[in-house]
Length: 266
Image (cartoon, rainbow, N blue to C red; front, side, top):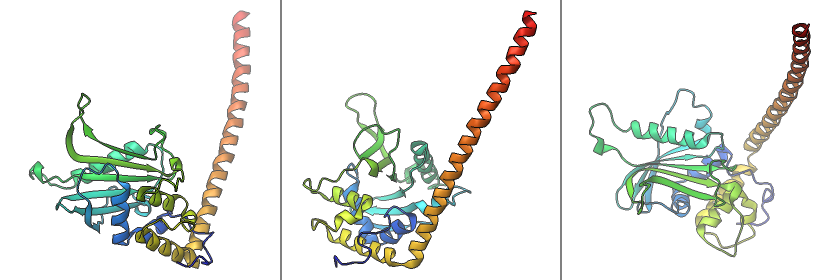
């Protein structure tokens, strides 16, 4: 890869929906990413995947841009539904459980035997830290296990994986593919400075460069950033107006209360 790329120091964020899908719609790249980032993966390595068109709710306009729904096959022939969620939203744990339940329930129809249900794994990539995950580690995985020792697994049908980019710190001296992929997601410019990444990350970088060169993609990103700034500005104005209105009502309420107390005293 040429180090003189015009957008090397001005790459679009990898976690913007159209960038993420533009990069990880490449099956070999996505398979390598999943195999190297799902550290507590209880199944055989992923062999193949296909993109699934799954409608989970009537109001899914936001999710259509921030989710990847995948049907995964492992080297042992296991078939799993993997849902990759890129967004960082409030109540994300509950939201991920809700989507897991919807994907799990959609597998069978009334009268079908339960043994047809396949494992459903939700992979959540969070740009911002989740307040429910207080551990400093950038990676968490959850399954159904006993609360009592030896904490054996009840079922492999549920799996929730969380990757928090905000908690990841670059430590290139501790070289491994997990760190390399997280660095690519969080700060792809940094990857240009090091040669210790695999061919799939190299391909992902090339795809990101192409997207960053595309005037339409960059214009769309800038428009979104402007809309986001305007949205937060409007929120701050509304908050200030609400505080002022609340203070005014409080003063009026205090005066009315004082008058009532004086009348009662008289």
